[in-house]
Length: 217
Image: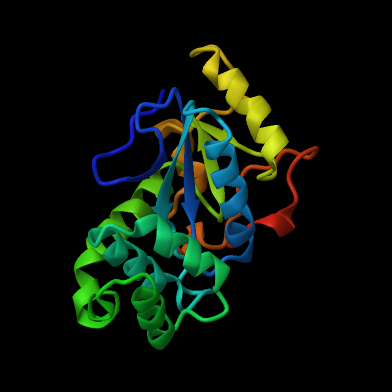
């Protein structure tokens, strides 16, 4: 079982046996498509699976991704992270400040706190998420780990459930193709700082991966 950081947002049972960890970008259409699938997997697990979301805004391609991430974190400080999370993906065609304010008001939040200077205090959290992603070898979004193992297939409910079943069998279980969250020895070939991380592809599995179903690859 992978233990979330104290600053992580957790959907589902905090004591679940299996952790799905997603690195995502609110302006990425593939993350928007993945969001309801991941929620369904968690809700259909009987409390056995939890989802952790970490921010990985690809700012040079998605101009609103960072401000959207800050708005989500600001909403989280008001007790509505997952509500804002879902709204941002559902309406990712409008993520400017005016839209973010409107979404906050719709959720009954203080709209002055989700944009501008007030939201900048959450920059450290977003930066820490991004840095953790780089350290783990993330190069595009969505990237999903199942109990610390990189999931190299598409974000599809049936395939994820099979991999989760494997992970739930214990430390010798194999999720996806069995590749773990890369350690320091592997990071050198993937992690060359922000600019390279935003343009390099993730390691691919010829039978499962399609370069078209991630942003940033």
